[in-house]
Length: 406
Ligand SMILES: *Cc1c(COP(=O)(O)O)cnc(C)c1O
Image 1 (cartoon, helix red, strand yellow):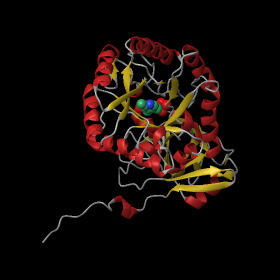
Image 2 (tube, helix red, strand yellow; image 1 turned 60 degrees about the horizontal axis):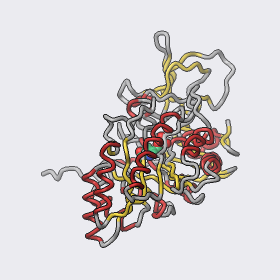
Image 3 (tube, helix red, strand yellow; image 1 turned 45 degrees about the horizontal axis):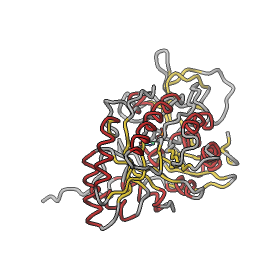
C-alpha cells in the first residue's frame, strides 16, 4: 500500500508507529478545487487551522496564497511561524481573550469575526490603547439546521456561536459608532461535515438580507464570509464536490461587489491524511475479536467523541479467512476504540491504515495515559518530510515539578 511514491511499510519501519501521514499532492488538490470553483469571482479561501494545525500543512497552504481562519492566539502564532500572512487571517471564536486580541491587532490580521456585544466593546477599547483600528465582521447565527452531528452544529439558535440575526443590525450600528473599529464584513459558519449545500444556501440568504439592510443604512461591507463545513466521504456519505457545493452560493451573490470568503477545514485536509498503526495483539473474544493497536483515542478521538467512522485497511493484504474485529487502543477506557466490527485477515505485528484521518485527528490529540503524541509526516512524491517529531517521554512532564520535600 502506497502513499504517493512511498510504501507505508517503509514509512513505518523508518519512523515508527503510530504516525500520521499526509499527502502534499492531496492537500494541494483540495485547495485548488476551491480556488477553481470560485474562479470567476473575487473570493478568498481561508483554511480553518483547527482541522490540522501542523506547520508543515500550514506552510503548504501558505505557499498557495491561502488565507487562514483561526480560533486562538496559538493558531495565529502557528500561521505566522509557517509563513502565512497576517493580513489574510480571520479570527473566529466566542471567547477571544484580551491577550489574543492584542496579539492579533499587533500582527495586523485581516478581520476579527466578532461573536458578541461584549467582544465588540473590548476590541474597541484595546484598539484605542494600541492606537490602531480593528477590522471587524459580525459572525451572525442564522438559525439554520445543518443536519449534522449535534456536537458540530454551530448555527442553531441554541448554539453558543455568533450573534442572533435579530440583534445584528443594532450591533452593526454600535460598531459603526465605535471609533476604533472598522466594519469590514459579515460572517457565518453553521456547522461541520455538511453533506448538502441547502443549509449553507439558506444561511447565505439570511446574510444577504442583512447585507442589504445594512447598505440601506449606509454601512457597506467589503466581504461576506460563508464559513466552512463541507463534509467529506468517510464511509458511504455522498457530499457534493466542492464545485457543486459552491455553485449555488456563488449564484446567490452573482453580480454583487462584495468579496466572498470561505473557511474550509475538513474538506481541505480530511482525506489527505491517514493514521498508520501497528497491531500489538490479537485477542479473541466471545463472538468478536479485538485487534489491539499502538494508536488510541488520545491519537484519534473522533470515533469516541462523535461516532466518527474511519476506513481501516491492512497495509499487507493477507489471503486467510477474515475475522470480525474491533480495533482498539491500549487506553484504560471502554471508549478507546478506533473502529468496530471490521472484517479483516490480519496477524499480530501487521500495519493498519486508518483512512480520512487528516482532519480533527492530530489537532485533537492529547497525552492521556501519558502517551507521547504521534509523529507527523508529509509525503511529497517519493520524498518524505518529518513535520512533527514523535514526542519523547521527558517532554511529557518537562513543564512539571515534583513538590519539594524534606
Ligand atoms: C471549525 C470551523 C471551520 C471549519 O469547519 P470544517 O467543517 O472543518 O470545514 C470554519 N469556520 C469556523 C468559524 C470554524 O469554527
